Image 1: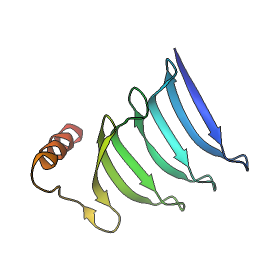
Image 2: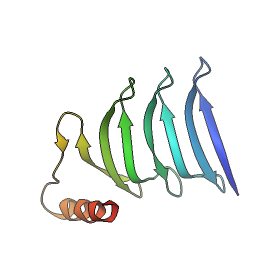
Image 3: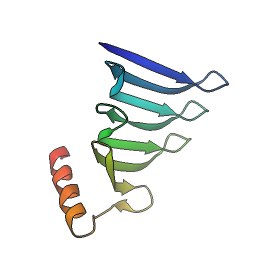
Length: 104
């Protein structure tokens, strides 16, 4: 069964909107700042596990970070200040490169 869950700040503005499947977070989600601007945007997979590309925005709506996520493990691939970020060597680099190829 699919449903959508909503959470709100004390001032009444939306805090989070997330799709639930069988009671678990499983689908698109958006988290907001108290001023109503989007803070985080991505997809959950089988619970609180970010999946695919996670976007982080400033409270003014500016994109500040992009991360690639696989079952809740996320790697930063871009930031507003540094641009594209190359992964370090080793296993993490291999996993990030494989994930990057999947989404490009």
